[in-house]
Each structure stands twice: as C-alpha cells, then as structure tokens.
Amino acid sequence: MDKSLHLHWIDMLILVAYLLALVGIGVYHSRKQKDLKDFFLAGKSIRWVPIGLSLMAALNSGMDYIMQPAGMIKFGAVLMVVNLTWFFLYPYVFFITLPMFRRMGGYTVYEYLEHRFGASVRLLTASIFIFWRMGWMAAALYTPCLAIAVASGHREYVTYMVIILGIVVTFYTMMGGIKAVIWTDVTQFCIMFGGLAVTFFVIFLRVDGGLSAMFSNLFAVGSEKYVETPELADKGFWAHTMAYFFIPIPLLGFLFAALLSRVTTYTSDQVMIQRFQTSKSIRDARQGFLITAIGDTIWMFALCFLGVALYTYFQANGWPPQEIQDNPDQLFPYFMGKIFPIGMTGLVISAILAASLSSIDSAINSICTVVMVDFYKRLSNKAMPNESIEELSEYEQRRQVFISRCITAAIGITGILIAINVSKLGTILEIANKLVNGFTGPILGIFLLGMFTRRANEVGVFIGGLVGALASLYAICWSSPEMLNTTFSFMLRLFPAEVAEKGIGISFIWPSTIGLIFTLLVGYLASLFSPKIRPAANEWNWYAITRKKLIE
Image 1 (tube, rainbow, N blue to C red):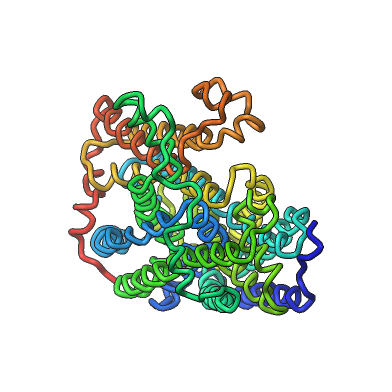
Image 2 (cartoon, rainbow, N blue to C red; image 1 turned 60 degrees about the horizontal axis):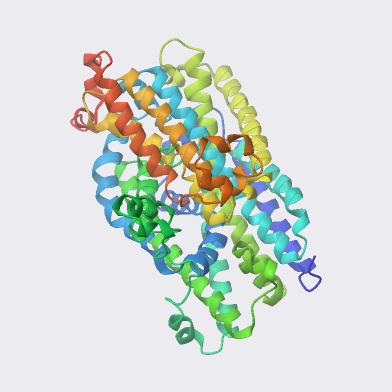
C-alpha cells in the first residue's frame, strides 16, 4: 500500500451520492414497468437525443477511460486510427442495417436468424452473444474498481469494490428496465465529459509548456511500436507474413479489427439494435447514430491525448514506482490519487464509474432480453412467440416482468464472479480486445451469411458459427501465453512450442478476425454439402426485407 495515496472523505461522499442517485433512478422507473414492451423497449417512446447520448455512453465504458491513455503511452498514436472506422460505418448503418431492422421489428436481433435459417442458428448466435457481452460486462466492472483502489492506495480492495459496484448496477437495471438504463446513460454521458474536462484542467496546470509541450510528444509516446517484428521475419516470405500476427499493434490490422468490432456492433449486437428499436422512427434512430459517432470521435481523441498529457507530466516530473510503470492501467488512477485536489478525485472517479456503468447496465439488460425472448419464451413455445407478447393477459405480463428481473439478478451475479478474475488476461486494452471483442467475428459472420448469400443454410451456418467461436477462443488463449502457463497449463499441448518455452503469443487484436474468417469459410462451404435452404428463407435476406414498405 502507498501511504501517500488516499481518497478524502469528500471524494468518498461524492461517490456514494452518485451511486445512490442511480439506485433512485432505477426505483423511480420500476413503477412504470407493467409489461415486456415497457421493460425491454421503453414502449418505443424514446427520441433521438437520449438515444444518441445513451448509445455513445453504452459504447464507451470506464475501460476506455483507463485503457486509452495507458494504451497511448504503451503503443503510441496508432490507437487513433480507430476513429477512421466511422467513415465506413456511416453508409453501412444508414442504408443497410437500420432499414432492415426497422422493417423487421421484434424484441431481439436474433429473431431474424430463425426466420432466415432456423431455431438452432438463432440459439447458437444468442449464446455466443451472451458470452461476448458477459465478457464486456466483467471487464467494464473491473475497470472502475481498479481506478478507485489504485487512487486510494488500497489495491487489495479491488474484489470487494467489484462486488459492491456489481450489486448497485444490477439492482437499478433490474428495477427500471431499459428506460432506467437509457436515462442513467444520458446522465452518465454528461458526467463522463465533465470528468474528462476536469482531468485536462488539472494536468494543464501541472505541465510546464502547456499544450505545446503535449503536442510535441504526440508521436513520441509508445514503448511498443507497431513497426517491431519478431526475428523470424528475416526467414522468408511465409515467415515474414506469419510475423505480422505477432506485432503488438500493426496499423492496418488494428484498423480492420476496430472496423470489424464496430460493424458487428451495428449489425448483430443486441445492445445497439435494442436501443434503436426504442426510437419513435427510423429518422430518430439515424439522428441518434450521428450523435453517437460525433461524440465517440471527440471522446476517443480526447482520451488518447490524455495519454500524451500524462506522458508529458511524468517525463518532466519523474515516473511513478516501477510496479506502477509495469502496469500502465494504473498510471492514470495513480496520478489522480497523487495530484488531484480534494473533491476533484471524487468527480473524476465518478466519471469513470459513469462510463463503466453505462456499459454494464446496457449489457445486463440486453443479455436479459436475449435470455428471456430467445431462450425462455422461445423454448417454452413451439412457434416463435414474440408476435403475441402484447396479447398476453395483464397478470402474465407482470409475471414475465418479474421473471425478467430474476434473470437480471442472475446475470449480475455471474458478471461479478467473472470480473473478480478478469485481470489475469493482461492490461485493460488487451482484455477489451480479447474478452470483449473476441467473439464479434463469429456473430458477424453468421449475420453476413444470412443477409447477403442465398446458398447458406441452417446446417452449414450452425457448423460455421460453432467452428468460428472455437477458433476465436483458441486465438484468445494463444494471445494470452501467461494465462496458458498458469491457469490453463493443461492446454499447452494444443499450441506451438514457443507459447510454453518463450511465452510468445499472437497479437491480441486477431481473435475476432480469425473467428470471422472461419465462420464465413466453413459456414458457406458446409452449406454447399447440406440440403438447400427452404424457399421461404430467401424472403429473409437483406435484399428481400428492404424491398418491403417501412411502416412506423
């Protein structure tokens, strides 16, 4: 424990008041949750401003608050290329995914897959989504607890903080449903940017030379440059090609991985699609997307520049203890605990909490929606049940809201258990790409096969999705040699000898890409050797759906 680090009682009071306010929002909205349409879709009553702000808050968790500055210091300006993905996403979302899902309606995005392929593909993809979002939730829950623990000088309290914070976010999500999630996310959006402004103000006052000194270090940061290659790069074309997968963050590879992650988000992520489905119209959804894109671009640039500012400060005033330098995720929390005035630490940690909770509550609610609609209701009825949800009696609607709350509680408890052990995967930037984005590839591959091919069928896509998920999991393990050498040492024989002997793993950006490639190739090829699709299935590809009239 570092006795020079501490949180003043005023900072703690700010944190407690903030968490109590979130609980209050959940309790307030709990009185309005009378049926599943209210609980999962907010009665389709949300306008474009809260949708855009809540989407941006849901996209960016406290992981970004910690990992982007730390990643900038470790890997350099290559991280900024992620903002280029919005240029590709804009036409894709406006003209491909939003028109399709607004015409379909429904409660979950995976209902589409049963129309296109069948129940098995729907349930498989929904299962992969649950693993994906549980990983996101666990990483987002761990991050603010790490920040509070480091800033207070009590890193041994991380586990207890994970449990407390997990209980709070689970409670208000369980009580208030999607409406509570959206309005707490809007509040958290404002707190996130307010905390970031306070952080820049404090650092600006502490750095000699101000902005000019910071800009001079913009391309000096990055102890692990993306141009580094292993020694095997000198041993021929094939070896040189394989070496690319071991570079920490290759520029083009990182851009593609970031684009793949965001395309998946706006194609098959229940968090995003459910939020768009709460809007009054497709125009509200599109305007909300623009707010999300603009807000996210400003946010990511600001967080990367925060990393440069921290680097400039430490370069001029001396670096922290070696144990902090060896864990870049702790640099920003350490700076807060060491430098921030009383009261401001509480405000900025509240901002980190806001960024994290906005992702956690969205993940919990979306997972609950999938479990309730795609599993509970789907498996309790032979036919797709969602068309008749509104026809249920008032008693049955309230009973299903109660069941949904019980499922929410179970999801929260599971997320807490995973979050307690999530630090074993590496830095938060690495955790985000392994655990959070690792399963995006298989999910996207399944949807692309359904939307843009005619030959893909239920058997082939099921096999492709399963193989793709296993390939992603294999890549996640291969990118985590330290985990294989300890927790999962019995699996080492499945990997190249270098993993055990030298601890050499592939870059953490590749699991999603590998999963996508295997899903597309295996899914399509397996479909060629499987029975042809049902004629009615062709009515559910993207071309057929978007020809239908949009009724708002």
